[in-house]
Image 1 (tube, rainbow, N blue to C red):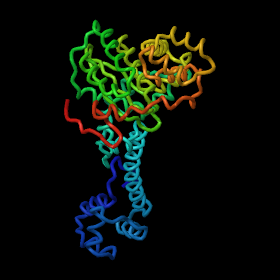
Image 2 (spheres, rainbow, N blue to C red):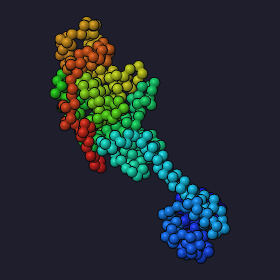
Image 3 (cartoon, helix red, strand yellow):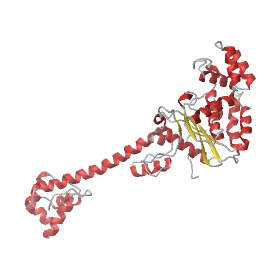
Image 4 (cartoon, one colour):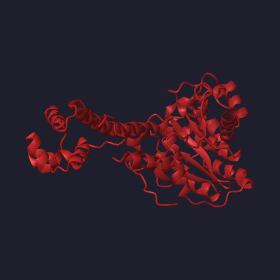
Length: 372
């Protein structure tokens, strides 16, 4: 026999059985020759126990071979077993690097599985890819200077959960010719916080599916607009900031993408530096701002009022424009006419108005989705 490393982790006992067969020895014969019990021989051959240096020396002496060869078989077997385990660790590491598995499991998006092959297979199905090495099909509204910073695993996972929810919603047939009518209808809800609860139903009536998916840590996502097919648009928001101004600006931003038949996953929408964004995102921001408040009107108000933005002036201007004062304050914040600590009492919370009116994943409520 020559020493070699087995392709599969066979215990040295299998080679011992080959030697016994070649000599027509029984287990009892071997036990008598090297001075151990029959049970020890049987356990060694079955791989239930390993070779010790003393046993390797005794076997080698019995067969006229080298003890090093038999110990080499034991070492090769143990290394092969460790290598198999290491391959599992490597694949599990790649799986956990691809997505925030723990957070996804906590929210019921995926089942954490001890079997790494099943876990990676489930993740690939969730991300709609064939292999872990593949890039998921998703478009990000990233800053030009650091696009990879935003295409992170948490953001990618959020997007595919958003698609899952949208696919379980129904809506009327979408018609581009009705888009302006939709915006007119939506604008009727701008003055009063309580009217926000009517938004999901109106969007569905005009053919746009709407859902809410709480953001994952480090995702910084505000919303996404995408198409399930050529005639089925969807908007999903994260409500990362529970503020009226952020809700309306993000919603209008996503509606701008639907208007242009774009797809985008948007991060830090109101905090974005427009100069660093792709043209598609700058266009969506400009359209959103104009849809909420005509910008020539806002600029005129700024010229007349700056730097003394009294509350009563904000209220009067907002009433004249048919919007909630929080929308005006949000735009002044975004233009850096006000610092973010000023007039925040106008930035009312809106999450409770929406939860229960739209399909929601988050804040302790995680729907289990059946097959579409």
